[in-house]
Image (cartoon, rainbow, N blue to C red; front, top):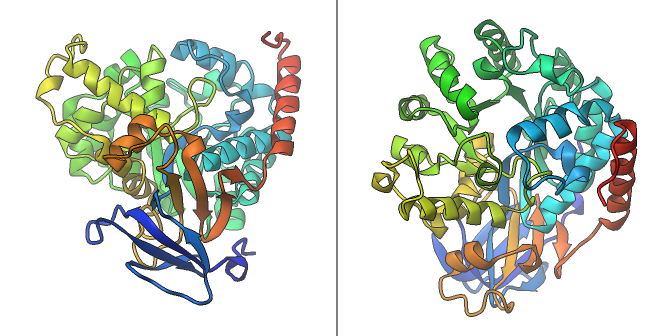
Length: 456
């Protein structure tokens, strides 16, 4: 059954906006963009269309929606619990401590809360790294939330958070077989708004034998793969990317998350095999224990990374904060705060325009959906946002990319369109309040089930 309804989608003509297309052939210019049947029909100057609803884009920037390539959506009702937590505290408190008590409704509410927060801040696509596959019903609830919210989602089926310690760091358990059911019965259409990927543990979190079996399963099912690597001292010791390269398993269908302590040689291997990377810039600088963002080292290896939030229990779920934190770390190391990374000042640097590219078209490439989103290319599905440049915090927007990265926030996002459907307009989401009441109730139930007092 299809969940897309193109007949319900509006015909919209945005006039007079600053178009930041992320398409090398189109470039950036002041002009118009026409959306019809869920797709970008044309972009140019002085467009007219008698059938379209006109949206005045004067003083606004229009760009592809942000793409978050790694977020644990199920934690959406637990946001902002531990901004000062270490990696071990996060694992203990959330994955091990609370994850086992989630029922399918908690997953549904958490995913929906995360989706709506994402949409409100201009994130039109999320790659949902779902290591809450406690049962088939849990996975189905997560997927249902993505259909309900209207966001574009890549559901990355992972492992359970029951017996969480037995599923990570040397685990001999193979990937849950329910992924076959989801692929065959739930998310079989790779052109749909919600699609399926495989979130695998790889040799860093399982064993070489399990890793190979899991990878072959994902490829048998025709699924792209994501994998957490370079996690602190353990990642530096395991060198997961090297292991995959040496066993012939490293390939272009893989996205590697974090890469904080992956070696420079591993990053060159990643690039040579056409694989992609996801940098969680805000989380990595906030959370001791992972290592620091590998953005500059990835660029040196020939990889333009995508960006991601990771978990809202630690950092805000908007891409503005991720871009700023990623840039802040670069500037700190250029100022001499790199410690043992004293070679970093010699590495390539990035600027605000690069960050917008990382947050859009590079995210689409990492998720394997750049054929349909990530740029304002004609014929692609209409996933776009409009940012008000005439708000007090952005005036005067001398350099638009720099203004958005340095000063932007969710309140500046005036319009959000996903696959041609308007999900936020005039600065307001079309749905939301009841979900956040349900999120509070879910949080309370989970804390009670775990025997934890609610924070004051």
